Image (cartoon, rainbow, N blue to C red; front, side):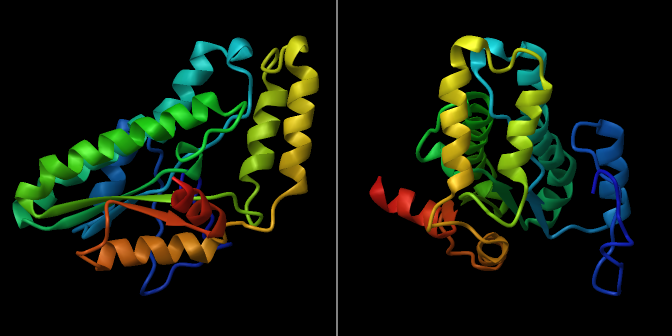
Amino acid sequence: MRTPRKDLLPESEHLRIVALDVTDPQSIRHAVEAAGPIDALVNNAGFGLMAALEGTPLATVRDVFETNTFGPMAMIQAVLPQFRERNAGVIVNVSSSTTLKSLPLLSVYTASKAALNAFSESLALELAQFNVRVGLVLPGRSPETPFSQTAQQRAQALEGAIPEAYADFAQGVFARMRQGSALVTHADDVAQAVWRMVNDAASPLRVAAGADALALAEAL
């Protein structure tokens, strides 16, 4: 966790919590050292941004990529030496169903996750020689997390992220997001998909997680 909350998630003999900021090389190094031998790396850190590209500063674009794309790359670099030396290991990168069907106002977020997809596909071929598996889990939209709400709030807090010319369009998009859908992704859907990918050597490279993500994948 970037900010460990051991009061909310107590440690036990089966769980150890360490501080980790995937955008900070020193934090990555300390976390990997504290973890000891690692069998599986799950890159789940990420954040969304719902904004018009025209009003999004490039510094904000870079921030999204730092966490969603470059963060997983840095984490993988940190664990690869031990994976390669043991000739074993699993890397699971959590992407997004928005890479299956694009949505408006999510161009930067979707681009960061699409880059993660392409990177993972190439890396899987690169690391097969060391018996290291790479997989992608693509979750849909979850009503159990504040992800969409937070993505909208980031845009609202970013001056000019929704230019006046986009205001009516954006309000319509936000309204449809609030209405939700009968098909959603639950936290357990993602957890089970990750668990299967880690433990099943026959797991495919890409796995959609959640009813909405599965529907999108089947429609392709």
